[in-house]
Image (cartoon, rainbow, N blue to C red; front, side, top):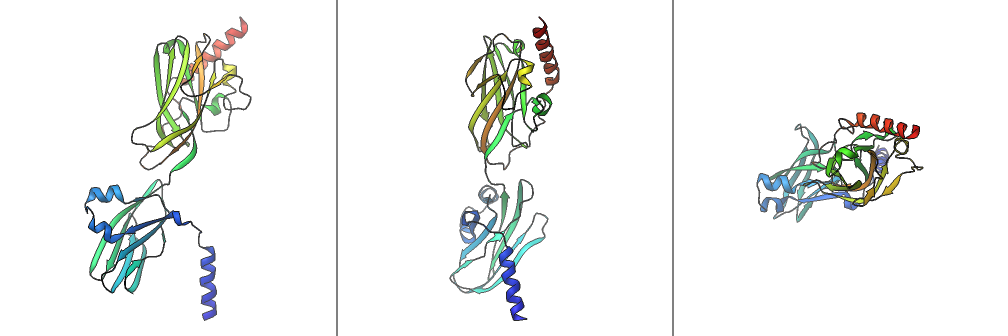
Length: 286
């Protein structure tokens, strides 16, 4: 029987998920209690993008230690009686499952007759090297590309001397900023910005500009024949009345508290595409 139990424990250890030391969030319960112990401090401080939690505390004297963690619905997800501890207490590394973009746990540590309780918000880690684009018209409808991404169709004549600002759509799931299209003197400039309150950055940019429907139908493909540029560069639209612009960005951001993405199709884009098709057909005829 003893050999069986040893074998069982060994097997469980073997199938336990591996993790790195930097994936552990350590909380000193006593330090939290000694700091500004109020709701604003808790809400702003105890947020973790790590998969594991480690709880520690200095012990003034030998004491019985019990640690428990409850989920958002109050049900226990972890509880352990560590027995009588001395010197300094340290729990094992406890895995906290993330459901959705964030999950709040309630941690309680009892040292003898003294209790420390605090919420811990588990959030998604920072996303790096993710794709983003301006919303407008889905590329799968425009060029048949198998992607969630979109291009933005512009009525150049209507936009002359002004700007159009649309949401910046990232990872097929988040709205992290805005993209602005400015037309002046028949030339186009595209700029992008991360929204205030979003911890993010634009790491790379490529902007594809199609001035005919034939070029637009190649957006998102390797053989795109139109103009390729960068953000904040001026592009001469050569007198075209319509343009299709695919803003292909690489971004990094923390998804916690970032709003969900809007629909990728803007009102009026389908009508603009139909006019662009007609304009290209008319040019081909005459």
